Image (cartoon, rainbow, N blue to C red; front, side):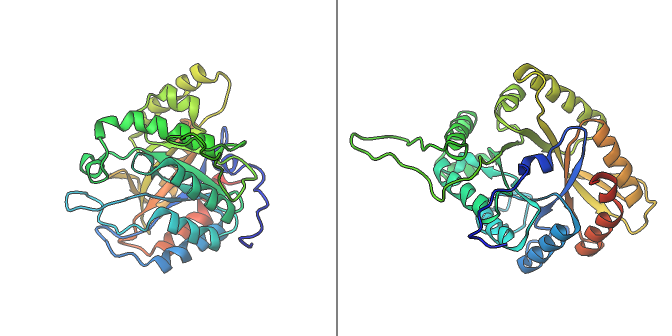
Length: 319
């Protein structure tokens, strides 16, 4: 693969991650141990290559603009566009997904430029996941009003959609008399899929109308089934008969004991691989189309966990 070869991916990368009646599995980067703040990003690139080779469907990258002592995530995240560029250059098949760009704190035309750049580098393997952020002090640091979050999210989504959907067009904040008509380069070969990660302060009906799907956090099974039922009802109201994906981010502490039953941890489970297969089967039957694993490597090396999941879990779902 070369960066200059811009042959679009086929079929659409969104269809390889979200497909009706199926469940696919991805990985969230970076992978760290509990309370680990220093990340070996060369190791993260090696993990990405391994996940790509072993058949995971997606790599997810978070956007954490600022850290503070009161924010519970101590990890030193790279800028998402920098990391996504490195992943695009070091993988060949796996989908790359921003999970999620904090669109309310970035100008939408800058986000669009980043999105089409990653789509070009990855040969069409990029899905633009968008969130709104939820920390009022971070809004203040960027000169934004947290009470305007919902409106900003919708406005920026519309500007982004115009820019990354073919035919692409730039919607300027203002256009003085005599201003040129702007456009974005490199030229796109296909529209970039857009995904709502979290609610962004919007109704599920709005998300169903505008997004290829809805990505949410882990909840206990009964609550998640109710969440999916609410989503399906919204999709039927917004686009009757259409398919819209539903995905879950789930933390995984995989035991060496293959028979260890599932036990709750924050935003996921500790369990052996047999319980993991059961949990994923139940999620698929309940309407989940994609699960990204937020792997904790406190007890085991991340590579060991990834290789075990690839050997014994992926064949159950990635046929």
